[in-house]
Amino acid sequence: MFEFLFDIYNIRIISALVMLSIATTIDIWKREINDILWIVFGAISIVLLFFEPNIANSIINIGISLIVAPIALLIWRIGIFGGADALGLIVLAALAPQISLSGNAITPLTTLTNAVIISVAPIFLNLFRNLLAISRHRNIFDGFEETRLKKISALFFGYRAKNPKYSFSIEKIEGNHKKLDFSFHHAENTEFCDKPDTWVTPGTPYILYITAGFVVQLLFGDIVYRIGNF
Image (cartoon, rainbow, N blue to C red; front, side, top):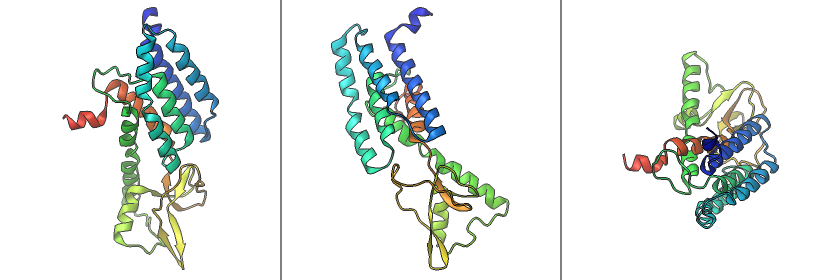
């Protein structure tokens, strides 16, 4: 039992899971993660280097894993996710570089690509929510003057919220009519919607998808690689 706990490989996995669990909980609760969290676990990743049986190989492995860093920073600058998510990916690359328990192939980008695929899940949740509302005879497009194509698209990208929270509005006013607005929402610059009875798209913390992507990496490997070789 103690050998398992003090094995450097397992310490890296446990540290990464603890970091991501704390980050996810805080982000869901406050929608903001203090940089101290990344500093602490970044320091832990450095300390763990001195307990590696082969420090040189570990440094090379971490260096390869940090290929994700410029990509994460670019995605942050574009606004697809926040700075905390980018820092989380970078620290994760140093803390648990290319680690998997599955024995399947992974890459330095596996956690990120897994996260991207998992982030599609809300589309199906939105569709289910909207179809349920329609089955209950709710006119979810009441007051809107839109094309059928845009209405069908809205079923996937959002839902009509009575009291939205941590969501982005996907509607606008043109003249006397409401219109659906699918323009891009910058993760850090766009304000959350608090207007009642509004069509919104969920502002799910991306760190949640990163955490899920890492867990899938541990247990399953690289989703893209596995699908490509199915």
